[in-house]
Amino acid sequence: MHFEILPDADMTARRAAAVVAEEARKAVLARGRFVFAVSGGTTPWQMLRHLSTEDIPWSSVYIAQVDERAAPDGHADRNLTHLRESLLAPIPPEQILAMPVTDPDLATGATRYLHTLEAIAGSPPVLDLVHLGLGPDGHTASLVPNAPVLDVADRDVAVTGEYQGRRRMTLTYPALDRARLVLWLVTGAGKADMLVRLRAADSSIPAGRVRQEHAMVLADRDAGSKLGK
Image 1 (cartoon, rainbow, N blue to C red):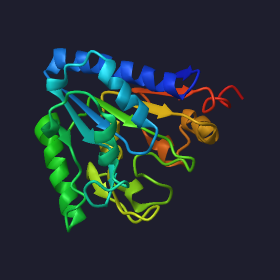
Image 2 (cartoon, rainbow, N blue to C red):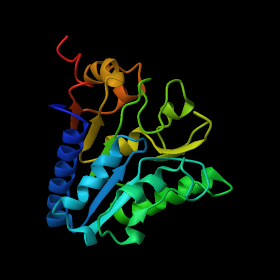
Image 3 (spheres, rainbow, N blue to C red):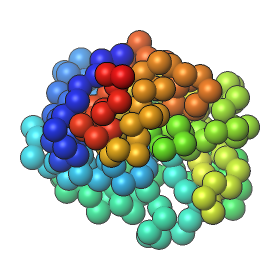
Image 4 (cartoon, helix red, strand yellow):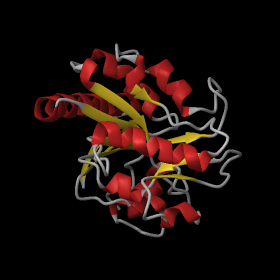
């Protein structure tokens, strides 16, 4: 796993946008499209805004969701709401692939989302780039400590129990581990201890169970402050 430590959160977001742009150009040249999965949380918002300044073939880009909260359309709790607000780039709206978390039956919605991914990324789907964040408790995507979803090995998309007031839909380890590149974006001093454990592939935290062979970590100085210890 490759690590880069940047001076601050904004520089980290700019570097992440540049990595995404480079991978997009390579994927479109090689396969005709770029399938990019974005996690929730506040950390990726700056990265998404900076993407509008990059040279990206947007007509051939598909943006999927790594995870989503079960909340109404347009709600502030929805990752999709912030993704659409932050992504200023000219991507065709139908190429933003929203997790169907308003379905009455979330499990059926998860199966439907898998079929959506299969239609653009193959069966089983191989995502070109997956962005992941790192929670202060070691969670990533909506794979949280001690949750049954951590042990799901036969589905790429699953539904979680309630976490911080909402049920979630999330990609599972098989989908994450199949990605051509995993891009970790980690900022803030509150992530420093967990970043050390991620580097050590500590399987006692959910993030530490993601395969590291094709992974890059971009962190700001605060998040990376304990890596040398």
